[in-house]
Image (cartoon, rainbow, N blue to C red; front, side, top):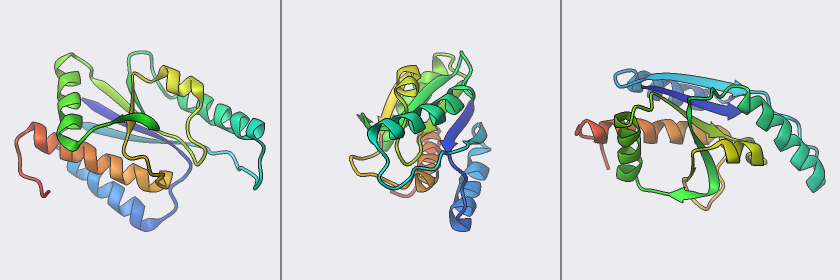
Length: 159
């Protein structure tokens, strides 16, 4: 199975890069991982709704350009379905059994995801009703994917 994480913006903080690298390394036992960063657009303070929508659309086109037709796409979105770790593991396992070999997780920029990206998604996943920095969300997502594979393989992992 291949897991791809497409996210908007460059990751600048060393502690996040280090944490993400650790989870990518751990996941290497279970799957191939690819991290794709697409450029973000600068959002001026006090931007109008129209400008914010245009920014999301531009970022969305960059995301969609990196998704292949056979990919199973999960969009991280506040309005998505909230699941616990065992439920996420069960979904990943079921997708693998069904022959889905390429899972793509999409993390939007500071304004979220465009409607086109949300429509392309096969599933919308929410980690919380709270808003997290999109850079931090990469590490949280990878940790949960790693936890999922540990659950799938009946291996211990701290609670």
